[in-house]
Length: 273
Ligand SMILES: NC(=O)c1ccc[n+]([C@@H]2O[C@H](COP(=O)([O-])OP(=O)(O)OC[C@H]3O[C@@H](n4cnc5c(N)ncnc54)[C@H](OP(=O)(O)O)[C@@H]3O)[C@@H](O)[C@H]2O)c1
Image (cartoon, rainbow, N blue to C red; front, side, top):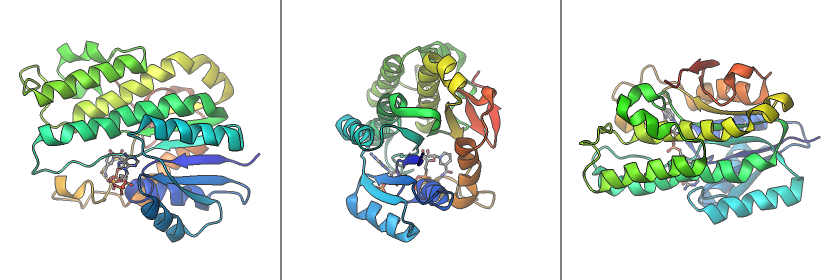
């Protein structure tokens, strides 16, 4: 059976390298959807890879209708999906107040992750993989203890509610008094990993029996236009192509039960708490 793959936010940065890596590992009958929010940018990126398996497609993860209708088309066309790499992310600018950035950031990075998980997990074929690109900041050790209970959520709706409450606290200026870290990337990444854990908690037995993997992943520091403004010294950063390799190995390689539902970096599980 041909392998059907989807990469979100794939027109540049790590997402592009993930799509390129999947294309290079594809068989002729495979199909890889290189997706992003702009038709011109995904077409250019697909042309830059220049491989027959690559199909550019518009998929705005912040728009639940865009995600649901894309997934429905996929189901009608292929019956299911084998690899979903949920990578899309809005950027943060160091010199713009959080109050101006947190809304669109949450819409894409958190609610977008939930939309992808809701739409694509039911389509995952046995042996498939859905990976959410998060970060090593996405563990509870980066939050004060009194906030941990908010992320013990057992459903995506609960995770979304926690994230929206935090977003509102940023907007009304009460977030730091409530103990939230100043850098909004941290609660957002914790929320992404919590979303994966909530979904995986409900599917663990069936998925592990079928060899299907749902996990969050940390690529380490990657040299992209998104990270450069935040880290003056990028000498330890990987190129996107290097950073993509362990993620692709996780998605396509042999399953290890300890990875299921966890945050994985370079093949190792980063402890949640
Ligand atoms: N770079 C690092 O050091 C690092 C470290 C840890 C984790 N990560 C994670 O790795 C992932 C990729 O990061 P990156 O550095 O490659 O970022 P990037 O260069 O900014 O790429 C992000 C991609 O997401 C797309 N995107 C933005 N909003 C979207 C939306 N609503 N719907 C669909 N696509 C959308 C962007 O498209 P446009 O071109 O249209 O904006 C772009 O293709 C992110 O999840 C990030 O948090 C990165």
